[in-house]
Image (tube, rainbow over all chains, first blue to last red):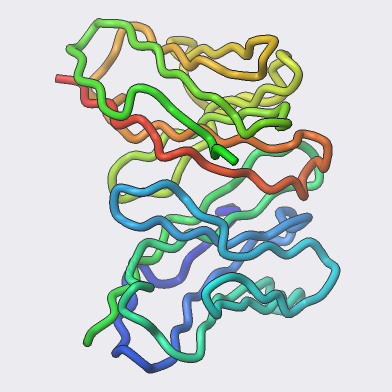
Length: 113
Length: 115
């Protein structure tokens, strides 16, 4: 079974409107969940991390994600999109053993002026 | 503080050649992981090293090998290059002590093109 599924390969929003990037994970892959962002020709940057301390996680640049165990989801949201948010976003999970990161296939976010 | 550094930034090789990629972790980090990111896909795990010992290996052929040095820097070696090895190779460093909850910090990557 796919460890991490990003439900949308592309998302397009208008500047100033909310952003929702969806991620579902396999129930055997959830000691930690992360969201990373990758701007063109740049490295992966950590947005936020869930490690069971709180189900609503706040990250950098106004992003947040909510862990919902019943839905095995970890969707990324932002109230108001900015042009600089245009990038590729990756949902990542780890397992109870080992440190390997399991990446989703990515969601490309386009922000329309 | 310096982040994760990788060298070279770009590399062009021909089929059958060998390549060595290098990575220096964040100061104080003892674990290094390597990932392959093919265009349009998410990164795939290749190796993880901690305190010079291999801690994990992904589903890659034996042509791929790596090692970690006493200063915690790392090399990824790929022998007998194939066209399909063309990708962005990412190095990530972490403290190595938090297990599955350890955050990994990524370098900018090395873009390998195999002709």
